[in-house]
Amino acid sequence: MSALFTPLKIGPVEVANRVAISPMCMYAADEGSASDFHIQHLMRFAMSGAGLAVMEATGVLPEGRISTNCLGLWSDANEAALARAVAAARRFGLPDARLGVQLSHAGRKGSTPLPWDRSAVLSAQNGAWETVAPSAIAFGEGQPTPRELGEGEILAIVEAFAQAARRAARIGFDVVEMHAAHGYLIHQFHSPLSNRRNDAWGGDAERRLKFPLAVAQAVRAATPAHVALGARITSTDFVDGGLNVDDAVRLARELKALGFDYVCVSSGNIVAGGRPATGPGFNVERAAQVKREAGIVTRTVGYIDGPQHAESVVASGAVDQVALARAFLDDPNWAWRAAHRLGVANVQVPRQLGRVAPGAWPGVASSRSFA
Ligand SMILES: Cc1cc2nc3c(=O)[nH]c(=O)nc-3n(C[C@H](O)[C@H](O)[C@H](O)COP(=O)(O)O)c2cc1C
Image: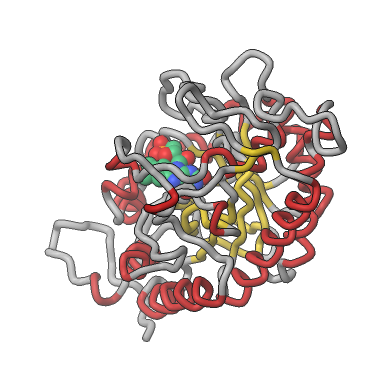
């Protein structure tokens, strides 16, 4: 009996198993709108057998994107394009597949070149924009210094998160995830390394939480009760004077009190070079502490090293769910293979892909009939 392939209730949504596909920027959008790339991307993840697939960091405003090619959800055109990708995934994906979207604002980590073209020089002519942040502190040496946000702008960003959540719900996502980790804007307000404000939005730990919680409250109010709501949070900045796991526990408790259904515990990337070399399951222990002390459905992510490792992390009770990113890029059928390796009977496979060579997939049967 596999713990990994046991259903999980996340607020109002049940996922068929504890495997989630982690959000991954694909740098393939046009003016924030999902392209044909996203249709195939989401479709194959919906066919993958993972209980949940979460779409990449999706900018709530144009300047909230990481790059010019990042996904967004600030306009009717963005909403229509993403709805088309979700409809395709629903039509051909496994009926049990649950789909989520991660809402984000990149703040000072916006306006970057594409990862495969890091030497590109960005200018207003090729789509770059002025970045904004809680404080005028660059992410790292040689990086642009962002402009400090004014109060009115902060409130407008909070509303943009809420508006994007409404759009996500209209599209029909099962899960909405607020991105409060990896050094993006919400994390920038939370961490003392990037927030040096002396007003209501910065200073002590409580005031540094004001923006994350304002966004959380607005997104909660905008998200219908049938959609599961969560946040990716950071469990350490890996830098002296930065956030640590106690800050993560506090944020998770506050989110739970606001009606959030889950947290996904990650770490790092608030400052350039701010992540040491990491080994298998490098966030698991901190995630377990968050789960224990905040009492909220908890996922973790980061170098989950194969099916047996995923199984043991979930079976130990440390967390409720694991997310994998690179493993699914490498093998979109990771969940089928994992289920097979763990001896799960009757793994669901989309009908179109179910006719595997005899013996090649012992234990993998075509999914039950669905049209
Ligand atoms: C290509 C790529 C894009 C990513 N984009 C996002 C993103 O949009 N949002 C996010 O929270 N994490 C993002 N991440 C981080 C992953 O979700 C994940 O946390 C990280 O890769 C560690 O998991 P892994 O060891 O299973 O790859 C990205 C990772 C990769 C490899």
